[in-house]
Length: 307
Image 1: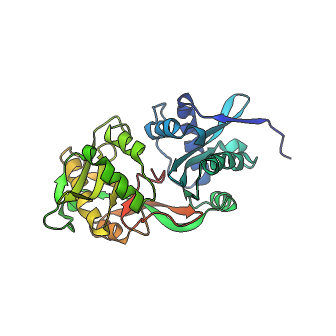
Image 2: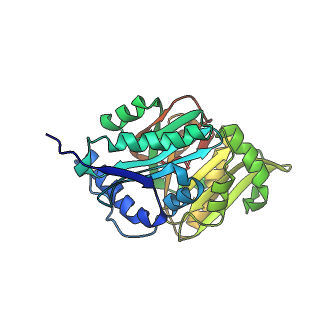
Image 3: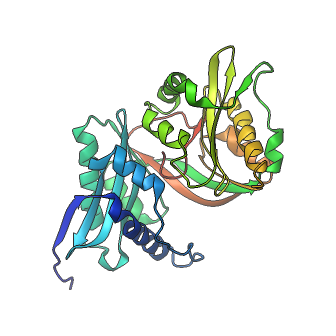
């Protein structure tokens, strides 16, 4: 018999974030108890979740019992595309409808502000996928977390011979917005400002691009902490490869030799190149959506948060 509990909900604040991340860690370990232990929890400031609290405050919600946080959801809205970046509930209070209510409130933020497409990158756990399908999102792709040696990526080619490298993409924001509308489905100027200003990490980060006769072919970012090359977007799938090569070269110049990329099964160009370079798939998740969106054959986001 389940004991009745009184759960309250409110908007998330930045001070909630360290506790929320602990809940996320505990929830993930419970979903996959046979997996290796996740990294130790530290009360560090979570930069990307904090960015979402600032850009999408009405989409970031916590659940509380007796004043203690037991679950949270974070959703972002870009144009008419709503994305659930995180949803976790403390394992001891699973099966009490808390996750369902958090998701409903987060989706309400999207519906109230013109969202037409709802999407999430989900674990393979049936309980998670069932929840998202009940809320109208169904599998449309697989997300792969890949890692490997950055040195072979220096050799990636695919751009036209007269394409030129953009060392700093800060002055190309209008063309980047055009590219985002084409390959993602909406502008993301606030996210570019966040990445470009180094907000995603306490370490080194770079923003770069590829252009031809004044036309932006694509953009990318690289983060030294963890060796991440993301997000990457290009008008043509092949132009992702030199962008990844630029990111790899920048990381190697900073003595980072192992890289990480999260991409989807729809990006054959990038996955083929990475696998050919000896990279391996470390984990996978499922991309679910209420309707098709984005051209993921020429775009890969910064991880399963789809930012």
